[in-house]
Amino acid sequence: MKKVLSIAGSDCSGGAGIQADLKTFSAHGVFGMSVIVSVVAENTSRVMDIQDITPDMIESQIDAVFEDIEVDAVKIGMLSTQFCMEAVARKLEQYKPCNVVIDPVMYAKNGCPLMDPDSIDTLIKVVLPYADLLTPNIPEAEKISNIKIRNTEDMKIAAKLIYDMGCKNVLVKGGHAIGDALDILYDGKEFYYFKTQRINTKNTHGTGCTFSSAIASNLAHGMPMSIAVEQAKKYITTAIEHSLNIGKGNGPTHHFYDLYKNGLNIKESKGDL
Ligand SMILES: Nc1ncnc2c1ncn2[C@@H]1O[C@H](COP(=O)(O)OP(=O)(O)O)[C@@H](O)[C@H]1O
Ligand SMILES: Cc1ncc(COP(=O)(O)OP(=O)(O)O)c(N)n1
Image 1 (cartoon, rainbow, N blue to C red):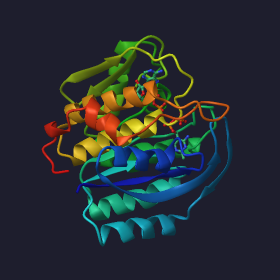
Image 2: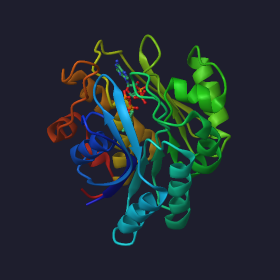
Image 3: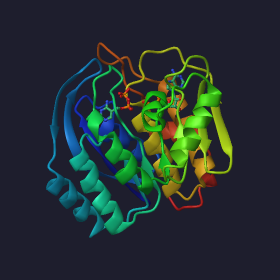
Image 4: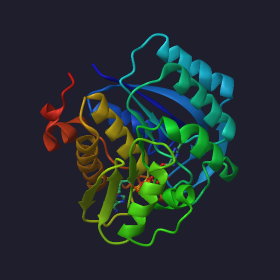
């Protein structure tokens, strides 16, 4: 069985963060593991409090996983401070895992900051170079590339600028745009376009976490990058279509194994299940 590690924050309401990642891993038939970087008291409407785990404890959790278990992919989500980022980067340097998908989480859907804005330079210089894939949404891509994104052409310019900062692939996600839900992958040579109709729902809590975890799972199964993204796009679209009207704010996406098995051709994966 393929084994995938999430290094991220905990969302006690279960829609985003580590909880969304582990549900996505299970739905993809991979064994999920988690290193908690921050505990977030949040729900579908708001973030109430954040408690960061100490850098030493983050490093110990990563050591505990890697000294014992072979890891086929790593998904990295919320890294709230420069100190969390440096701790994770030290361990990425030490263990050199393959298939590292980094979702540069900055804000929750309700606008609450999940990353100290002063850490952006550390994110770019210290963490980003470890990404086999970086998956910014439009506001995150604007912050990292330092340009305003108004249209598809701007998404491509931002992807190129971010690629030049040192990651191997960039996926600029269009969930925050208007019109079709278009995501653009850039691998340094070509652009790949992944487009679906926008689903008319407020229940999109955890879409970015789910999407990046689905990509990491597919990479662990042995899919090439563009296929891993294409299949994950089908997964997130179905998960949004079946999203749940839980809570008073933005409800969560829905994960279940049959959805993946029936909706996607898992045999395309070169890896074992
Ligand atoms: N209403 C929607 N309909 C269809 N796809 C969506 C919708 N909202 C987001 N997506 C898709 O969900 C994925 C996550 O994107 P996004 O919501 O931008 O990430 P984040 O949660 O990091 O802000 C992308 O594939 C995006 O295109
Ligand atoms: C603990 C935690 N991590 C990440 C997020 C952000 O999740 P994301 O999927 O990017 O989007 P929203 O859930 O904010 O819509 C989070 N909220 N909590």
